[in-house]
Image (cartoon, rainbow, N blue to C red; front, side, top):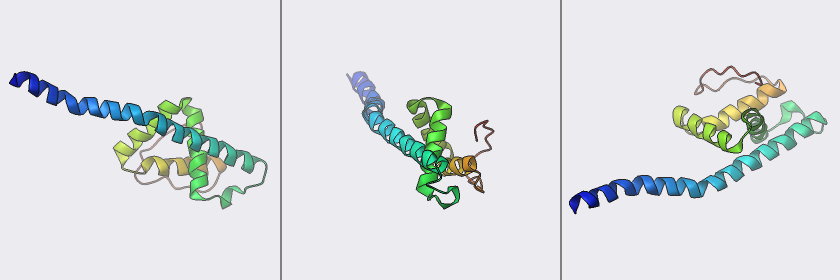
Amino acid sequence: MVVRRYKLSRLALPLALVLGLTLAAPALADSVAAEQAQGAQVLSQVQHATLSPKSLTSDQYQNLGEYLMGRALGSTQLHQRMDALMDEMMGSGASDQMHIYLGKRFLGVNATRPASTVSCTCSWA
């Protein structure tokens, strides 16, 4: 009996985590998808000269970076996993800083790579 109880309690935490992540995944994917859509809108406005690349806010650069990263990765789920990995490896908010950097770099705005990031050689950045 003790062995069974131990095995059940040992499995409870991983199962709870998997269930929690599974239930949260659609909301996170919707958030990434919404940020990518906003980024596409920012890019369109810059291309049509209704926004100046140098006058964008950090949020607009971030959304543009979300859009660019989403295009490069080709999948909202893959993008979401990449963001989680960046934040896990480089600290909370690292993915946001990287998106801002990508947005600025894409538009030719002087951008300094965030100190918490690793060197990345990307053909689209």
